[in-house]
Length: 247
Length: 106
Image (tube, each protein chain N blue to C red):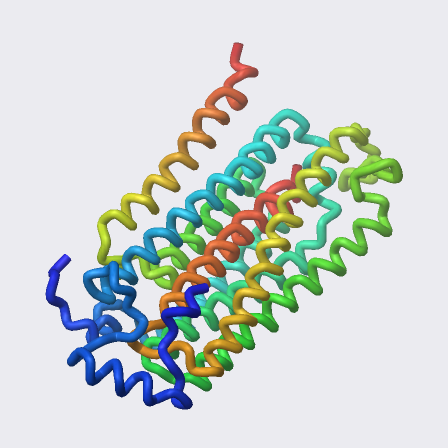
């Protein structure tokens, strides 16, 4: 992130004093090519949203592919979806929602300059992100054990309806479902891993006193990223786990 | 954009809410999650996907509006970027599905 414009911590108050003497209300985090701090903040926010739009389109392409293939191979996709564990998915959704709350509380803490509280919320966010990844790992482990991972050892047995009647499922089409499942949840998990690294870094910087009420843009922008990753999961959960239960 | 804004007051221009408010939104999101998971076990026929995606959209809207502070974004350009992102996603999905959903209509 933008460490170079960080506010000096309590240890280096002399720099702040020099800066204050220089200008009446000089903000050391303000770069010279911006008119004021608000303009600088708006520019950073605009850049972050532009990035998030590319992320929306990136995941949107995968969502679109999933919807089209689900229409084309409806039975196999329903059978594949019914193999997913709704309980695990729901727990992970809840974990991500709680982490989004801690992120927004972290931004709030940064805004009022509570350094320890800010660090605490950032650390809790990282822990919740890791919890999500561990649960996801157990789900993946189950997929490996059941041979539901696309590849040479992929094996999908036919599903049965409520009366115990066997319904034939095209194994190749079911493999397509699991390919999309792993592509979408895997790409989402990669974003979670990056998010955990990002928030871990921010937690260290926050603890060192890099952020103050006059400058906490990295916290805000990383928060926007985390919320977007949360929203992607909010859609992945019903699309992959829920909507094909009764098909 | 006013040119001579006092830089020390940047923090007050941001419209954040109280901690209780954020926790309340979080609780609402958790209730919606429990609801959508429970509804998945009820057979509503073709309505199952509709209900699930409707609840997901309500949840996403809550996150975007209250956690990502789009209402507090002062810059119109940022709003334009956000809206255009969802607009192009809508084009991608509606035009693709307008094709694939209607192929069986011949």
